[in-house]
Length: 230
Image: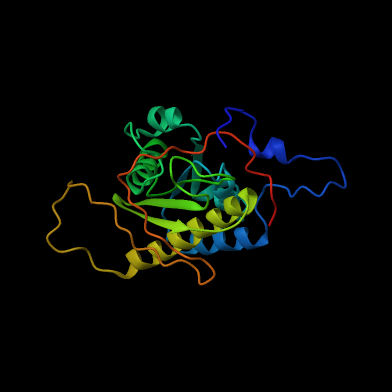
């Protein structure tokens, strides 16, 4: 899946009445998960930066009633060039925890929010640069503290996009809950950037595989992520 087709996933998903192609957009489950995440914000503001989820994270968040009060916006940076120019991601591999952290930090800085969530990965149908379909990397920035986690999910492209979105929303909600109750780290130097932390605890129906973050990979650019349904 390396097409440079600029058509958005939403446009590809619009089909004739009666067609069996599933629509791309938040369902009740994703809206509920986004609402749960919002409950952990405790007055903080949120932004997003997405690659392979192609805006579904932002749509899910925006579908929560009252989200306009705390959701400032999101960036869909599908191509590597967009990640570099819009989010300040350094040149190099883009399906890595380092990239996901930089995307999250860039979104927080660009939108001026307390919290940011980022996704990058491979939706398929084939592998990219040695990374199998279903490789999902979630990054976050919570009041300057950053972290990331890598997941290995299964399913066709459309299903992976939805499952990746669900994983991202669930994981940020857990991280927000943890940071709200955890004491500050002792010995931290003010202003010193933190190393990305892999603390993923995926849902029981997901398998997780830690993937090296220093091997060259490329983001899925273009292609029919909407093909294949839940």
